[in-house]
Length: 166
Image (tube, rainbow, N blue to C red; front, side, top):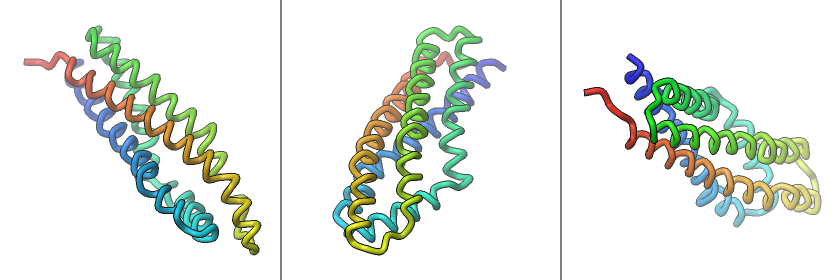
């Protein structure tokens, strides 16, 4: 029974963590470079709309599900003393916790600041609002994409080390 729970938690953690890494990677490789080539009004309005749209059940399931499932996987690995798989699961939990710190400590406050800027009327106001947001948000997103990917890799390694019931 414990092996089945370990496997389920580990598979779920790997899936959700991989999907969230892909989301941040997509922003780093496509969304932000594409928006970076747009005008200030398009950039500000689009990011404000993305900030609103992303707060939904599917994203929250992914964002919080990764944490819960990775914590469960690490806890179940510790309970079963599954050796190397335990170490990889604990490392993944530490790394994904870092993703949460980056997101809540940096990206979300930047999103809130952008949203609080409303709909500036002049080009100068739009440029100023964008300048406060774009560069730091892109840097923090890139870091969380890297950290999230590292957590995903740790979970894949834990899967490979998992002792599977015969």
